[in-house]
Amino acid sequence: MLFTDSHAHLDDRKFDGDRHEMLMRAREKGVSCIINVGYDILSSQRSLSLADKYDFIYAGVGIHPHDAEEEGHKGLENLWKLVKGSKVVAVGEMGLDYYRDLSPREIQQDMFRQQISIAREVGKPIIVHDRDAHGDVMKILREENAAVAGGVLHCFSGSLEMARECLKMGFYISIAGPVTFNNAGKLREIAVEVPLDRLLIETDAPYLTPEPHRGKRNESAYVVHVGERIAELRGIPVCELAEATSKNARNLFGIK
Image 1 (cartoon, helix red, strand yellow):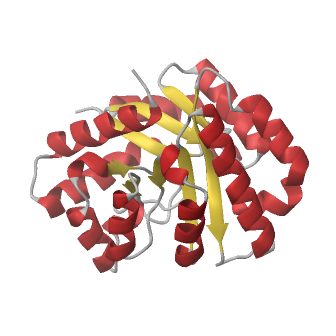
Image 2 (cartoon, one colour):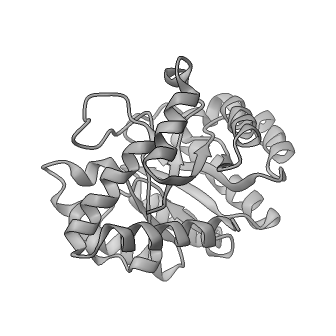
């Protein structure tokens, strides 16, 4: 079985002591491809460096809503310099976060819009972060014609109705470790209802560690637990879920 971890932050300093060993554990578990996702310019540069070092890692470059105010216009200028790299497969992560509100909402929204514009121009999909901002995320995706670029709602936390609207726009839905939690009833329903050809799985490592490792640092090998849980919920073999979600990731991110 070959799995794809469609969203991770393996450049994070939490991996500084054992990054290579962690990546080899993922390979041993059958993880054949990882999308490492930047959240500001420095992390985007680190993602590119990691992708250059390992042939099974690809990079997303973008500015997270938490960093929208600090990065500002200069950050967008630097993003333009990164986004055309040969191993850059997506723009993001980008979006809105009204839970922590670390950047003013109007700045988050402007940065979100401008990154969608960049993605449309360079012809690469977007990776969308949405936390407690469902209505405005959908509004901006429609107004900015984000469907032209395509993309994924990562670590999906919206309703089934929202998922269906995203699917109508041509977006993929990615599900992470919380689907393994005991209180994940709504997310489990979505994991079953999303068509198999529009579903991705991810870790968001080092965050959102799935059971049975909850409470520890997350890593790409644990995407297998996400896949196993969703396969169980859907009543299909794990190998079918792994093959389908890996194919979806290759299609979305243009990976041969």
